[in-house]
Length: 325
Image (tube, rainbow, N blue to C red; front, side, top):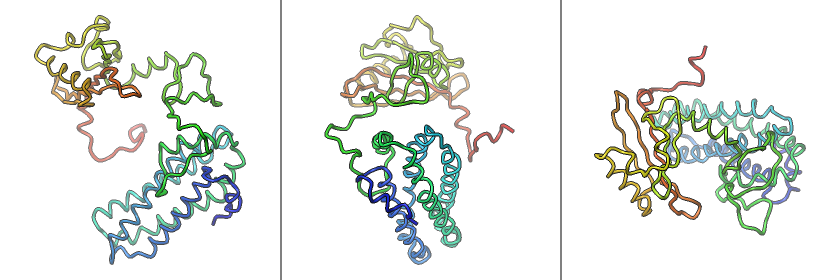
């Protein structure tokens, strides 16, 4: 284990791979503690250690959403398939153990814990001998320099947040204000840069059209400035509503509630309001969200309505595409 450690020791402090290896050391310690603790004799101690280990989900997520996409850009797609499946197998084992934890079924815990421990150790070995060495060969310094912001949004297993990498004198820039030009695998022609990614006006329109919710946007002046035109809207809308004051867009018997919501949002005392009603034999979930800019200034309200009749009927679980074959 840690055959790649000599090279890691020569990397700059807080390099993303250095942070991964700091996590690896923590994981190894937790695995050893899990092997030494007896769930039957000291369930609480076992449970605390197990919960620490389950924060490995942050590591999985960083790899899947940060490291793997960069590897794909350089032509290596294996980790996005094989290692992601490995992650999912370990997630399944964690879910199973969590079920036994809830039941305090220490016999089943003892029977299954070793599979999780062995699986995590095997994963660390593959990371050490293949994933990270290849990643260091493929990715450039500029690639690694872009990791910190995304890693920070996902989080780390470590007790203390790593310092930014690379060390910069300038202050942290939120992704919504980050306009650094990066090499992308698609054209950005005729697109706008949003908080996360790029979309053309046509793509924005399609996205809003096919969202399974009704959306109406009222600006800070209480005027309706947008609604999405989906195929199955819960409540009908027409072009005539654009520019109309919100107080004229609701029945008299309920308009006072809408106006109170807007007043509370403007005052900053509330950010969300929701209710649900029976409408034409369907259960409709209606939510209002205050819209505020980066300075917390009120910029309007979004009204969202959704038919949740079938959602209410969901039971158990359904795996992806179970009913496609």
